[in-house]
Amino acid sequence: MSSRDRRRRRRPARGRGAEARNPPLPPYAGELRDRLTEAIAGEVGFGGGDRAVYAYDASVYRQVPVGVVTPRDAADVEAALEVCRRFGAPVLARGCGTSMTGQAVNGAVVFDFTRHMDRIVELAPMRHTARVQPGVVCDRLRDAAAPYGLTFGPDPTTTRRSAAWSATTPAAPTP
Ligand SMILES: Cc1cc2nc3c(=O)[nH]c(=O)nc-3n(C[C@H](O)[C@H](O)[C@H](O)COP(=O)(O)OP(=O)(O)OC[C@H]3O[C@@H](n4cnc5c(N)ncnc54)[C@H](O)[C@@H]3O)c2cc1C
Image (cartoon, rainbow, N blue to C red; front, side):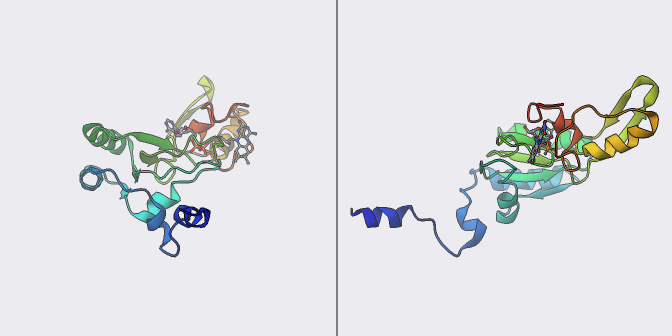
């Protein structure tokens, strides 16, 4: 085979959109999608568009997920995890996707907590504690704590965009 032919073979298919570039779904994907849709109140997205959007984070890495779920509450998270466990499907939690070394992308079922689970559940200034849902953004927590002379320690540059929970992970090493 000539080097020109080899170059042609490596070239990706043109003009067929995100669907054409996504790797094939695992054989259990259709069944997994149906069971997840039955099990949770939040959205389940296994289409080419959802998979393409969540294949990116702020890093240079690209990993197309199996699908995406956006849980509405903790019961949804439990139910979705239970379904994924039954299928042996890998799972990945995601905040706002600002981590810079590929932590928020994988060939897994991505749980996006930022769409629905973004509430401050309880702020207890006397105890210096807050209970938050995992999708709450750092600045919202900080603004809520400020009137009590308190703040939220981790201070990534993306504080307006990143979720408080994930700002405490190794993705954000400079609190
Ligand atoms: C331009 C830029 C500047 C930055 N500057 C700084 C900086 O100055 N200091 C600093 O420390 N960081 C910095 N960062 C890193 C970034 O801000 C942090 O990675 C960010 O806080 C992660 O939050 P996120 O919501 O985007 O999480 P994601 O990127 O979505 O996820 C981060 C990790 O947390 C996990 N995760 C998310 N939610 C959950 C959950 N509910 N349960 C379990 N695991 C979960 C994910 O699986 C992933 O491994 C910067 C990033 C960018 C793009």
